[in-house]
Length: 418
Image (cartoon, rainbow, N blue to C red):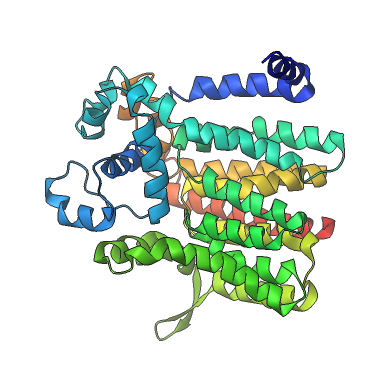
């Protein structure tokens, strides 16, 4: 016990301890005071695991008329089981009124006297994954100066604060697993790298797009390439197979509109046919990687960053998707400090796009636990539209175009360094 206390004191007096304490304080301060409805809607669905509901998708489809919240659950089943188990384990801390709050979708839900406690506890997994990501990032560098930089850049990035403790979605979990997969690849543990990427895809589907690139970058040997594909793809499919016979699952997950956003940015070829830009660029990148960088593991981060930036810049993204990019952008910033200005512009353009969604919940609405009247304010989109200051959709398109242009520049810079 004395040795443990001594080690804790030693850590707290080190650079990492002194950097972590204020960062942790800021996070603990934000957790109870920022609220986005997604965290409640997700935990409304997670609640049914404690009621021994296994096929949530079909259950929701069968009971949609009797539930107070009627949206479908569009995430893979592992999300339901992992976070449903977390909610069940922490139910004693959440209190007896928690379930009542989950089922209250009326105008008074924001006035629940225990709201601050609910938000704080429900965000604890994101806090753990957030801090774990900060420490994992240091493993990508050899010099102590670079380790310290990447640690600080992650902990004090306002975009991290906004997405994890404002929007409060679980995207940090697959993002952490993808980063961990790359770390294993750097340690020559190829099979673990493939498995972790498959596990990440079992929470959010986007890592599947990275799996072919991981395979061809991991080795020059065909057997290893196939092994990586089978390890990652097999684990992903194993988590879905029990639900393939569920009509609710197929409709909510496999055929949901969320999974089709990547295919909407295209160039019309006439006669109802479109050239899908992401698919065209992604295919070209795959063959270029296979031809030029087979087995070149040092190219993994720039290739992954390229795929993710293409996903992000060529689709009508959800704001929390930026979490997928943040670890790799942070690594790039340490490797190339000259990318600071482009990254600042990228983040500002991101906020420009997000704040011009006609959704008050992503801007002023986040502050409703502090003062519920924030929810009655007009969104920036409506302010611009009603006062005829500027066409908000045109302005949003301009921001998105700047974001895309900056993405292409960052892609170029990442390959120059690698």
